[in-house]
Length: 358
Ligand code: SAH
Image 1 (cartoon, rainbow, N blue to C red):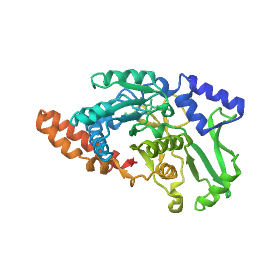
Image 2 (cartoon, rainbow, N blue to C red):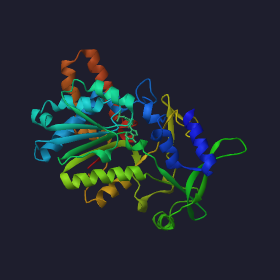
Image 3 (tube, rainbow, N blue to C red):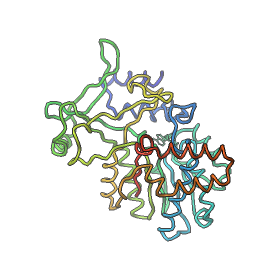
Image 4 (cartoon, helix red, strand yellow):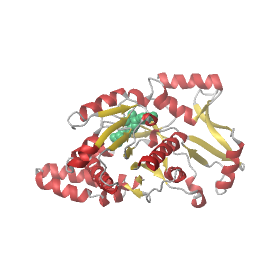
């Protein structure tokens, strides 16, 4: 377990590791990190994503993208940028639908933001017949264009590192991890918040938080959001961010909503977050209120946050299912219908996943 031993070395050197540093180390920083080389998704991976469940997912996003391109005045060039494209299924299915509107298809220029060489190989394979040239970037900040741009991210923001803060006797601390000398296990602890102003701000913003409360902040998510919003403000465009997460404006946040959302998933089951570090997918729920706030700070107004279910229904999953079912053999139509039900299930993915449209 090279990643865990790296992390233990860092703890030995500094006495501790912060949660965002742990996530960065485990997920992306070193060549052996989880998202650098594992194929995380699919039946053989640790979790299955919506574009892998059904082609309908990317197809409906394609219908959404065509509508937005029309609203933008049918520009002759439009960039489509996907962050963390996984196996490339979403883009493949989107482009299939895009061919229904030849002017849109012709206008589209594709960029994929990915750090995983194995997934880049998969993306190349799955987009080989798309009829489009693809640009690959290892960071969104490297994206350069002056054309209106549609940014897409499904299950990307949850993989970005978070900081955690915790309240103890009326004071806020930063949560950290240490190695317990008694049993050698990696455990939670806390240190004073370096930035005194921030600690004061927490006190003002979160008076309802009780002892032991957790508060999370993903600086990388906010920087990414700011880049996207600034880009849209300057050159025009849209963004679609789909992920599991929460919406908690401080003034209305309930006591029960101050919890740690750091989680690990391995072989399609939840696993203890601090065991097998680097072997399982570590993620955190996405803080949609803070993403919206960052967007507004850049002068861009997001649409009202919605659920995956409502989004897919609004943009025509039922119609698409109906028209495909007419031309597919009965058993394939039934499979497609089951897949659609899974994507919009009111007790599962359909409501767990939220859609931020900008
Ligand atoms: N969107 C895909 C995959 C989701 S998994 C789907 O829905 O199927 C998360 C994706 O983000 C993977 O492609 C992973 O390699 C990529 N990723 C994770 N951290 C990243 C980072 N820091 N920069 C770029 N891509 C990253």
